[in-house]
Length: 424
Image (cartoon, rainbow, N blue to C red; front, side, top):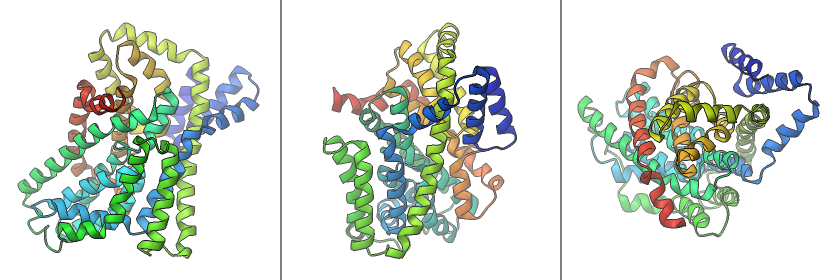
């Protein structure tokens, strides 16, 4: 059964069938082979999405779209530019810093790509940066949307591996800051080398002015994250608070969202949410079947016999996840693989929260690697270029993130230092 399911799934991938449908078809085939009751399909698919923490996904997506339509993202760009925009290469650095701030609310890398890229990609081109470089930078920077909490993939890992979502969130700050800082350092050095961005500071607002204009926008991540860690509301409840706050600021304070804008925003958010939840439902059925077939236990025993130390285990898992992330959507990968790999990681003495961060960061790389990187498609859509033109400028960014991934993997303190300080 397992072999037939995997062959079917890979064949569907080769035929460019969507990830969700490929996983679902292979799972239905597995049900057919086992002769199980067909109602099991509905039961397991519904059970996979009938979990309270998953309610955060549509809310965070809606919050991100409201931020884009309500002028919040534009003001965050001006604020970030007032901090780092005065140096050579300051505009690319602004892109990274803005994505870090936006990530503290949206939880979605694709939402970050569209919201920030729509503003900064044209601005970068106007300042003389190549269009394909701007798109590659935006796609990579938006990856921080799923690393800096709140994060939809972290919610999925927490649900799948039965790990505290609050601990995952707070553990994501260190890796997020590390990757964001490394990207800003890289683009600064790269722009110095290329001679780009000597007039990046032209037209930027002063820090005080930008802060005043962005005050309501900057209060949003403070309220959301402060409420989570202050025990005022759960991460799921925080997503609903984010929606209400973004709606009030966009409609009442900034007055950039009109009642007629709400239906398109809701429609866009519903489509994005349904795509993710459909993947989760199909991946849940797939995971149920392979678990019942004993695949996780078999893989666990094989890994522990072949990889005899935490060092080699992490190296092997990182290599495998990097390849998997190139072909399978992040949400589906986490739901299917987390229940398999997390127990094996625990066998090697790796903290489940630390391992969750490693999985999220690694699979987030899949969002910026061909052939199925969703951030790449989003950035190329905004920049109006073909995917092949973005690749040459993308490779250095991928190497920077890979270097940070190795640090995150083998220096647990980067992820667990703040978690241990708060929770222990």
